[in-house]
Amino acid sequence: CLAQPQKPLYNGGIIQNPELNDGLKAWIQVSEADVLVTTMVKTTKEYKFGGAIYAEPNCWSMLKGGFTADTTEVADLYFQSNTTSTEIWIDNISLQPFTEKEWSSHQEQSIEKARKRKVVVQAVDKQGQPLQNASVNVTMNRLGFPFGSAINKNILTNSAYHYWFAPRFTVTSFEDEMKWYTNEYAPGKENYFEADQMLRYAKKHGIFVRGHNIFWDDPRYQPNWVSSLSPSQLNAAVQRRMNSIVQRYKGQLIGWDVVNENLHFSFFESKLGQDFSTRMYNQVHNIDPQTTLFLNEYNTIEESRDGLSSPSRYIQKIRQIQSSNRQLPLAIGLESHFPSSPPNLPYMRASLDILRSAGFPIWITELDVGSQPNQAGYFEQVLRELHSHPGIRGIVLWTAWKPSGCYRMCLTDNNFRNLPTGDVVDKLLKEWGKTTISAMTNENGFLETSLFHGDYEVEISHPVKKNHTFSHKIQVLSEDESGETRQFIKLSV
Image (tube, rainbow, N blue to C red; front, side, top):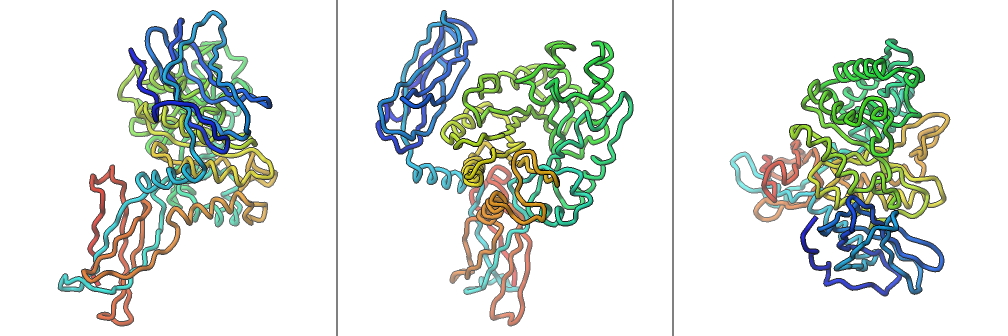
């Protein structure tokens, strides 16, 4: 919150071209504390929500959002709150256009910077002399960017499910097998058999696992016996649950969803105190100090009208938990259950920009798209936008397979033949590096190329060693890990 609003982006102004994605910025001040201000565009057909922020008095807060224009007419831009007594001041508004081509170009530029790296390979002989016209094939073995899907116990007994899943993905969450209602169906009657088996499966195939979840703040998803407990009984059950699952899996997971959906719901806070989430994050950290602790919420990037989990409200919550202990390794989990309507990519990007500014790692944890004829097309749009954003550290799809059908979106049919959504996954995996690059070295033995982060096998052949191919394994790291823009690799033939 600033004393004076900053200058408007691109010198401000309002667009007049309807065939565009629109990026919106405005500086907001209100007369009362902690007021939700939303912005929308009104046409003769509908209201389009463009973003929201909890604004403050006596200083200026930046509202960042966006929407997609799909009509040619005069439209009104509104800023509103839920209280009629609140005065809203607006300054330095910027509503700027992007064509689809410009939007895609921004994605490509971001991918080149955030997901790829320039790699210089030099082929040399045994004496270290460069080899001109060496034939080089570069094949990715493992994608560096964590990309995966939820699974369930069916993966343990269905070999076709395994053979489809394992070669594609590097990270997973268990659909239900780590949830409290599965692990403790009756007080003190614990069962981790399926979760243990699934964790062994994931380890065997080099797949990282997110711990989903320790607690769920939605009252509808508690073990049946929990709702009748007194506060003291519930507290004892909570401590037993937390100690049981965290002690069992400490050091084996890449993250914990500690209190799921605690922006929308407050089952535990209503019974055990408003500091419940803060206490649980600290207790989990004390047992499992090296594992990242996630908040996990829906509608933060997929639904601009939900003020409960808006980007600004999300940041408020995670900072509130962080304020109890600056050493907590916190991260932002975005479920990303997109509706069946076209995705609002400008709002997505603006929301991710806001979240990234808070400085926490961001993961997409449960991505799917509602069912409709263009489901695969919308799914691809969303995946491309998410993968291109530099704040995103990993993506997990919510597409665990069951014979009766998936939660909202499947990638295959029951014979594990790709559906259109599965084709999108394979198409993007190929684009993201799961292919072979073939080229020749120059007169100094060099080959320079841009590679996605990941593990590769490089095969080199040259006439000096007829009928021989020399194989080397390399790892392409991000700039953050090494500090160098280019990665130099010398390989011997």
